[in-house]
Length: 165
Image (cartoon, one colour):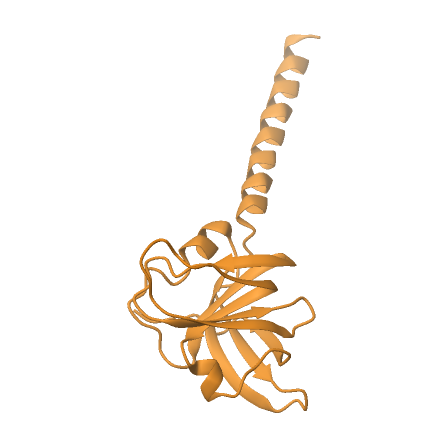
């Protein structure tokens, strides 16, 4: 192999490596690129029970941090945690300054479970459920709106996003 061919091969290998790292980083974070969403919850008849203006947590780092760095959460706002597939999920109230309702939503768009979680100190209780999406809203919001397991969730990306201070 002559010098020119070696240079070209090396350059292509470097470019391929950079592209591979970039794709790997995107795949690891899993980010969809959405900052906010409007989440609408309806009963079996299609009547709207509640609407949430939500920030989106769709990367591993965003899902880990969640709402733990916020001082409050306005009524009608929340956070939507997005996963690639439905699976068993567990949430804790790590570094939370206020209580939450944690709503687990299956891949079919139906609520599978709701937990009413208070603030706590370690060791943290695990709030579990099966979900593709998890919605966190101020504690009591689901009860005030008559929301229960089996209700339907519709997500419209591109709106929402202000979860509080």
